Image (tube, rainbow, N blue to C red):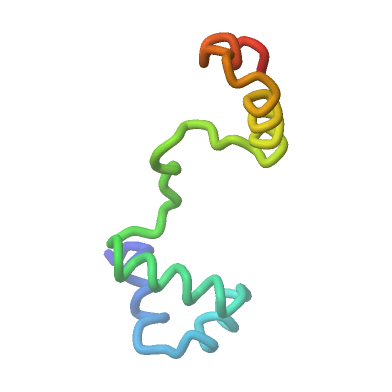
Length: 83
């Protein structure tokens, strides 16, 4: 008995990106990205972002810069408390 991934591979291997795109009804850019990710990482699942858990928004960065520039004598704790 063949698995689903084997059936898919038999149908899609050795095909051009535009052919796969037409068969699966998804964009060529998506197909290309998935193939690239598979070749580099050996998987196609989305990974959690690395580094910071919460990226600061542009608005948050502006607020921080404004706060720091107004009073340079504030401690990091007091700035964090204000934000």
